[in-house]
Image (cartoon, one colour):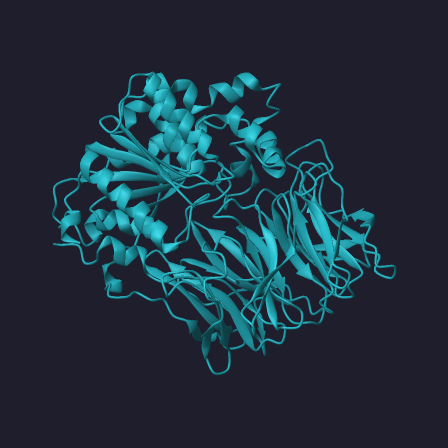
Length: 621
């Protein structure tokens, strides 16, 4: 059987990003790349009319979200320099199609919210060191910082009366702690001082509280003190919280409506699926959608008249954007999935499997069988396999459409995506098990994924590779240096090789993450060295493909360059024993179609040479 779609066709399928509803509920704005480049679109919700409003003057990569201005006449964008994430905040005028900077300068800035009158723009920034809350006055064009914490501030919500902000941060010595605060914002004098911050009593020290939304005198919050994260509603007047416990991990999204009726939206995590829920009168009800990954996207997902935006995808269906009616579970499709000339039935589904790690811990994983794809006959004797490791580490592989997994299956490779310890969706204890153990048991979990594949009769024992990006790239380096016997080859994408150097080059809020998960870099210097793949480079035996963006601020290009140099110091030669590729004008991954085509091409050619599968050659594309 021959493959049914070429590499370029898959990489070029148009995708939409960050849809969000206008203040009056009549339109949505989103990024879309149907022209081959990321552009800004606005769509009328009643007529369905869609208009492209930008002409190449929005970010080429759609990493960061967009949000509407209070007047509905413009949107806020995050603009960086070719993926370096040192974001400025711009306002894009929908009538003129012009973009102007509002917040510009050093550091990484993230828009959070705007006041109802459009005057005050709240954002978080590292411009003055740690990530803290700033406020920009659009009348006077002045800017000031309104919080001053040693640890990063996240998720800022403005109260309905505009007089207070709520946010999350940590003042505890326990770096696994997170609390929700409410502070006054002095507006009468035009100043902003974040005065009288009040920490809400949500849990004990050492647990993580989170913030999702503000409605009247209620806050929608989360808490992981029961282990699996739960959702609650905090009453600011009564200074009390009502928790809604569940057997599953649940994350709060937002309140429904404008009145304090107590109804709200939630996402539930279950066996690598994300299920949308609505809590009505304290009872959870599932929003009807295929088992996969659902979300209520954008800073504003409420359309009005009891309808919400719902984004839905499964392992073998690309994302679609729906307008979902909560009253009768009906919906209309706002943005359809575009498959180009590819037959949608060509995409492979996956199954959720579990296997035991070395210490007996059950590890969940997604298994894509290459025999279900277009490149391999169902009665094929054996096929090669790839363990595809997610980033984070506090993330997960979900039952969503994964273009890389489909690309590999279409080339004849079985794919296993393990959710190693450290992944989200299984509770605090499982997530935090990786803390102070990077490069330890979570890498054993990954290695045991390769062992599980070897137990499958149709997998070729001698053709198993590891592939990952970001923390997954770190895992690929770790596997090839710390568990070399398990692998035929590996692909490290934007990965980490030297933890000490990573800390020294990281942004302030990333330093906090590293301290939380690895400890103090001076007190734990020996641990930082021991768990760095570059320390064990002499143990490598299998060839490696290294790919890295030159503007990456999270895993700097120096990480890949150091490892390349270490290989050369060991006598390794390129291209015979390793391959090294730098991607210009790219940061920590990319949504840009040209970059995706290049990335797919590099990996396809490498695997075809180092670990060929029974798929058609690239010459057939």
